[in-house]
Image 1 (cartoon, rainbow, N blue to C red):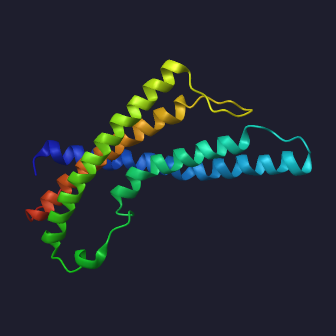
Image 2 (image 1 turned 180 degrees about the vertical axis):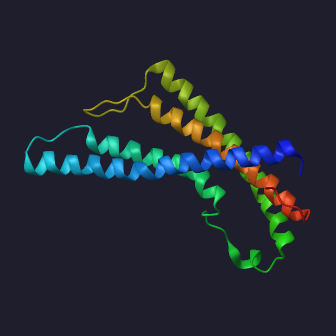
Image 3 (image 1 turned 90 degrees about the vertical axis):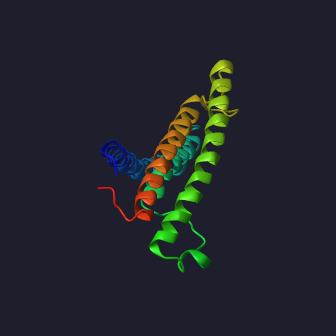
Amino acid sequence: MPGPICSYVRWVDRFTGLVGLIAMYLVFLMIGVLLFDAITRNVIRMPQHWPIEFAQFTLAAYYFAGGSYSLRDGGHVRMDLLYDRLSERGRALLDVITSSCLLFYLGVLLWGSISSLRYSMETGQRLFSMWNPSVVPIKMLMSAAIVLMILQSVSLIFKDWATFRGKSIR
């Protein structure tokens, strides 16, 4: 494969790995916040209003940021009824087709997320709760994560196309 494509695939895979590593540590942040909530509510008897929603935002950030990592490492769900019976080239071609469909879906999702982000920014949208946090940061993260999934999908298409042609990207 041409050098720029190989460089693109290496860069996206490395960046996705870094984002996935950061996402893994969000679980510890969420556990800490929920532990803080349990202690302040049950031991100190001073309940806080923000920890549960903060934990929900952290969980959303976790699965948004972890999506491209899961895609990179093949950790996503796949229907294996026919897939396992195909040759390596057949699987690679099927993956190119399904990744292309995924790109279309992610493009529509990105369009909707940017529209939703713009609306949130223009109106100063907040959650209706006692804590009343802005939803702009999580919507920004969602849009960025979708962009990263698009980049990772293109990387997968390049890798699968190379496999289909009997070459490899390294």
